[in-house]
Image (cartoon, rainbow, N blue to C red; front, side):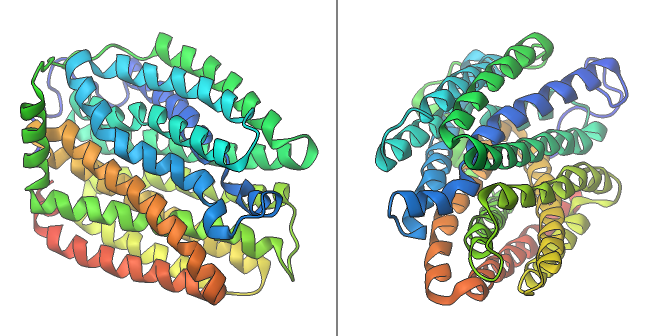
Length: 404
C-alpha cells in the first residue's frame, strides 16, 4: 500500500523547498547525535577486552547491550508517538540519551558500563522508532526516498564521528573524557533539533488501548512482504556490525599493529555510506526499489570478499565497497517499509528497526565466536551466509516491492 499523499498535494513537504532543507538538516543533526552515541564504543571493544580481561564476544556486549535494549524499546516509543506526537518523543530520546552518554564515562567497572549502555540504548530508541514515520507522514511520495536517504546519511556521519573521535580520545586522553564530551555536544545538537524541526502537520493522535496497539503490530507482522524486509534489515545489519567490530581485532594484531586512533580513522569508510544512502534513495525513486536493493546486497558481498586480502589498502577498499552497499540497501529497505506500511506505518517501521538492531546485537556478538575459532575468513563466511539469506528474503518480497 502506497502512502495516501502524492506529489503536489497541499501541505506535504516537497524537495527543493525551504522547509525541506530545514527538516533535512534537523534530521541529519538528530541522526548524528543518536548514532555517534550508540556506536562510539565500537573501536574500544579490543581495548575493553584487554583492560577488563574479557573475551572478544564478551567485550562486544558494550555495544550489543545497547543495540539490543534499543531494539526492545522501539515498539514502546512507536506506540508512545501515536499518543503524544512524533516530535515530542524524538526530543525526549535526544535529550535523555545525551545525559546518559555523559554518565557512561563515569562507570567504574565493565559490567556497570554494560548496564549503563543498555539504559542508554533504551533511551536512544525514541528517534529511530519515529523518524521514518515522521518523514513518511510529512513528505510527498516523490520526495520520500531522497529524504530517507538524507536522514540515513546523518546516521552514517554520526557513526563515523563517534568512532573516530572516541578512538583519538582513547589514545591521547581517555575514552571516559571522550564519552562525556560526546554527551555535552549532543545536548547542544539536541537543542538545535528542538528549535529547527517543524511540528507534525499530518499527525493524528491515537489514544488506543494496549489491545488496539497489539492489534496494529499484529497486522504489521502478518504482511509477508514486510516480514521479508524486516529479515533483510536484521541480516544485513548483523553482518555490517560484525565486519567493523572484528576488523578492529584483526588490525590491532600482527602484521598491522594499528593503534586505537588509527583503527578509528578507518571508519572514514562510512563516508561511502553517507553518499550511497542518498544516491541509492534517489535512484530507487527513479527506477524502483525492487531493482536497487539486490544491487546493493551484491555490492556488499563483493566488498566483504575484498577484505580477505592481506594488503591494508585492499582491506580499506573492501570496507568502502561494503559500506557503500550496506547503506544503499538500508536506505532502500527502510523507505520500502515506510511506503508499504499503510495504516500500520509506525508499527512496521518499529518492527523493521527492531529486527535491524536485534540482528546487530545477536549476529554482532556471534561473530566473536567465528573470529576466535576461525579468524577473519570465519567472520566473512558468516557475513556472506547472512547475505544469502537476505537475498532469499528479498526474492520473496520482490513482487510487492515492484509496486512500492
